[in-house]
Image 1 (tube, helix red, strand yellow):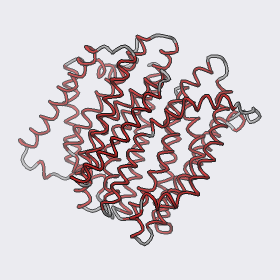
Image 2 (image 1 turned 45 degrees about the vertical axis):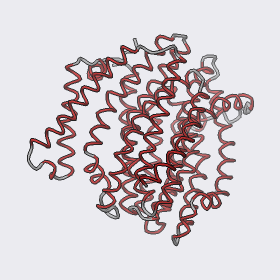
Image 3 (image 1 turned 180 degrees about the horizontal axis):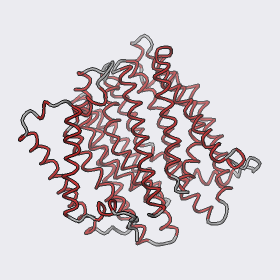
Length: 508
């Protein structure tokens, strides 16, 4: 079995663990605080600094990987790493200080309705300040996670992120009685410190950084000239989520929380398959581009799209069909009531489109970043933000909170369509017959699976009245078996490749 396939499997597993731990964090928050104004204030406030977190965490990795390859090819990889770590530290330190000082005014400006609740402003301000205070650690962590991805050590990069989530969960459980929901951002702050310490221990303090090396300001400036449009593009999704939250906060207590719970649940397949496959494909297409092999570059993108669709499409379709059972099983306990389950379900089914289209866009983005044309993505992303503001205003007027979730899927469709067609023209087109052939197999497989699920409920008496967990397990497992059986009948190359012992990713 190739080293890349082993690394890919480990990365997929570690990403699943990360998303599973993220789901535990969300259900802990839901169980302890439900859809109360405490949860609303925390979730709304954290979206603002979280846009900066994603700007750094994901954007840095996408920009640093091709940059590191370029410098490593001339024997300056470690020197470049030191320059970017030092530069990022000073930049994020400044943003952290500014963010902490401005947290109060920012919250009062964007969320004036929190003043209606006794501790609304206090919770939101403390949350924003703690997340802003974490940015300095997040920035340095992000550079090293990009470095580990460049070395194809995907699993360690994800493990370090998981440590942040686990610390957040631990603090929420242990200190919620003493600190209330503020225990959650405190846990996140401590987790970012722990994640950084893990990297220092892994690399050892001496090898962690060339402490004596003078920072090359010109090199840092050149890197950030490439990075900032990439980071801003990555943050587009979070910015759009922040816009959604602004509108949701005006719709009453519980709307922000239930929309967030719905989004996080539907986002899991995107994070597991969309982000994972895009991350694994990135080094392949980056190396192909550096070797000036356009055919391998395009085939790497095509396979990235198809691997994504093979696994993402049936999972989202199954979630759509079983959404009420899924929401109830995951969240309904403690402070999260049956009425909250009904509301969250109604939002979640409308978020399905956003998870699908943003996953495709994640692969497309890697193509632009490899070509060092992230400014295209940035321009399109800025357009999507404007579209999101308009569509949120229109749909929330007519459909309330459901309109916000629907708006997210519509904007994702437009964003995905524009970015894909732009990349298609930029690379001189893809193998359309190859894409259509495999996509057609996926569509047929999903259609047969959905027919089976409907048929099961029609033919098996009382199946809709089964316990949630039993229904999820039975229909989930048998539905997946039906889907993959159809794909094997088609001799689908991606399913066969994943099942083949000792196989290698067919970028041959």
